[in-house]
Structure formats: structure tokens, C-alpha cells
Image 1 (tube, rainbow, N blue to C red):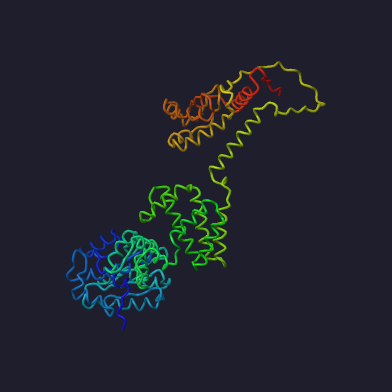
Image 2: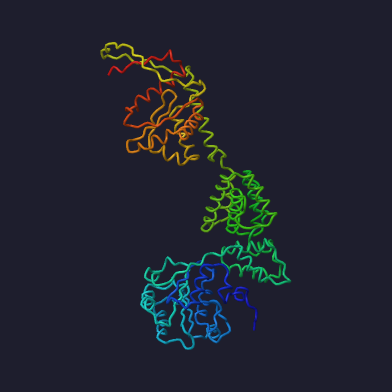
Length: 537
């Protein structure tokens, strides 16, 4: 008879103090067992391998233990030993995934009429309870609402959103979160035999691959140790089917250089090694998140060795944040596409080519630079009088209106610097963009009014009567100075800013537009060459 016991079963917790993580849940359950304030129904929710079933069994022992130790079962009394046996009739476990019908639930509930034989509470544990049918939930509902005083139900599920609201409202709910990598590594170290070598990076890799599941971490380490090899990073990656850390660094370097030939060569090497495309994309996605974490925070997301951390810092400094985000976004899309693709290799090839061949001008900084160049070219064309074409108007049969006397309107002050040809409205919009980034509070005040125009080197903001209180606030020295400085940076000439009340300001939309156009033309052709005629109509 094989006496070998897997690490998962050998290290399964039997006390609340043995559980990994779930500090808040452990504390509350332990205190209930200690004080005797036991609910009639519990609901344990969380992803797989986080300790839901183990906590349910510990709770069953703790509330029936004859010699509890600060809420933990002693594991030595007769009650603890009886409940630990699989033949106990006072602790029943049912897997709802394989017993989901209403008949299965009725058989289970028929046993609730019998009180416990030797203990205080009779405990029913229903695992994966979300798999029960609708009729089974209805059959369970009445007993769950008013159970016998000696009955305790503990329901466990990975998908609580599938449970009826009537079930949720009758249970005390406890959520089991994913276990932190550091806690998993600490627990794994306790199980390593003295004659077995284990690298810190290997344990970190196991914890990362487990994704918060202690049970998965035990299974992965058990698999590596069963091979007779040392717990090294290379052996763990081999067991997981992952590629080496060096290949992940090299592949990212190739994409960052837009070297499609090198990227495809590495993909060929990957295929010759028999690696799985989806596993590689998953590992590369994790590597991108590590580099992005170093780029943004200075520290990797998951703990790594000093040598790997230094490589991550070097790689993070050589790739822009925008490119890393684009690579990560496309990588996650490719990973999802490989699940349905007939040829996953083609998905990986296309991903690499798209990253390498994308035009560098497609990022945000490139687009902004191109817009600035276009705007400069457009302003230059307007400022060159030789490029302003005049068209002769066709003769009209209509009688020519009586000549009107020429009226020279007061011209707005042209820009003091002949090199500034930025339209005032353009400068205003740019100022608002900078204000939103650098001074969000002041930006919210500016949003309460509307652009009032640009006259005599003064930008104005018109506030409606209901926002009149903010006029003085914006005209205060500090705020007005900030806005004036931003406008001056955009215009390239000394300008100022003021906020005005709409009640005291005439409708200046058309007049302001005319004045701005006159000011711009005056700066191009000269003030003495501008004659404004009134509209004969």
C-alpha cells in the first residue's frame, strides 16, 4: 500500500492558526467559536485554493471541541477525533457539483431531524453550492431559514453571484481573498526538507504561478520535488512549461528595437523547444507588467532576486511607458486570441510583427509633434502676404449702392511681438489644457465661464450671473497671475487675464471676433494698410 501523502494533504491546516492569509476571517470565526456565538448558516466565498473547505472543517471542530484553545480545536479530545473520521455522522460534506438535484438535497435534509450523537452541533458542509439546481435551492431554503438549534450549515462557493438572494440573506458571508505571494513563499519554505536545495527565485515563481491559491502552490512544488531535481528557477520553469527569463528579456528587447527578424527568430527557437504559445504569452504578459511596475514605481510587482531586479531596471529605462502599455495591451489580446485560433503560432507571429512595424509617430508624443508642425506651417502661410490670393468679383447687374463714408473703427492692439502668430482662441484652448493638468482646482473655476475674447493684450472670461461670486476669486492676484503666465507662454508676448460679469458686459461675440481678425491682419500687413468699411446692409 502506498503511504505517500501529497504536500497539499500533509500540510492542510487543522487549526485557525495554521491557515495562510485570511487574517480577518480567521479572527472572526475564531472569536465566534471561543465565545459560543455560533450562527446557524455560513457562506464562505473565494477563489479555489484559498482555504474555504479547510476553514469549514476547522469551524466544525472548534465549535464542538471539549478543550478549545483560544478558539482553536485541541485535536486531542474525543469530539475532535470523532469528527475527524470520515465515518462521522455529525459532520457531513456534500459536493454540490456531483449532487446538484433536488433529490440529493432532500436526502441530506432528511437527516437533520436526528440530533447529533456525541457533539453539540451537527455540521453540514456543502461545497460548490452554486451548482445546485433551482429546485434544490428551494428545498434547502426553508431548513436554512429555521434549522434545528443543533444544526449548522456551512456553504462554500467560488461564484457567489450565482446564488439566489434568498440564500445569501440567510447566511453570514465571509470572503476569502487570494493569498499574497510572500505568505505562500513563507509557507512553502516550512515544507522543504533539509536535504533539498531551494532557490528564492524558484519559490517566488511557484507563488506567482499559483495566483493566490495555496493548493496550487503545493501541487506545483510537489511536482518539481517528485522529479528529483533541485528547486531551482530553471527546473520550476521546465515543470511549468515556461520559457527562461533570458528569453523574455531578449524578446522584449527585440520588440523595443522594432527588430522583426530577431523577434521571429526567437519565436522559431521557442517552437523548436516545444513551448506552448499561450503559456509564453502569459509569461511575457507577466514580464511586461514587471517592467511596467519598475518604470512607474521603481519596484517590480512581484519580488525577484537582485540580479533580475537590476535587469528589469535597465530594460525599463530603455523602453517608453507608452510602448510598454501598447505591448501589454496587444499581448493580452493575442493571449485571448490563441484560445480560439487554429494556428496559435500565427497569432504570436502577427503580434510580434504588429509591434515591430508600427509607425513611431503613432504614439501620443509623435501625434502632438506633427500637429504642432502643421499648425506652424499653416500660420506661416497666412503670415506671407504673397500667398494671399485676391479674386476679382464678377460684375453684377444690380444697381450699385450709394457710397458710404469710410469709417475707421478703433483697431485692436496688434501683438507686440511680430513673431507671435498664434490665434488667441488657440492659445486660450492650450492654456485650458495645461491648466487642467497642472492646476485642476483653478481649471474647475474656469469651466464656470466662457471665453470672452482678446482685446488690447487682455484675455477675458465671461461669467454668468449665477456664477458671479467666482469673478473676484479669479481676479485675485495669485490665480490671475497663473492664468496670465500660461497665456503668455502660449502667445509668446506679454498678455494679461481678467474675469468679467456678464451683466456688465455687452454681447461681444461678433465684435470680439472682428477685433481679433483685425489685430491678426494688422500684425501681418501693418496697421496703416487696414481700412474697415461698415456693412451697407
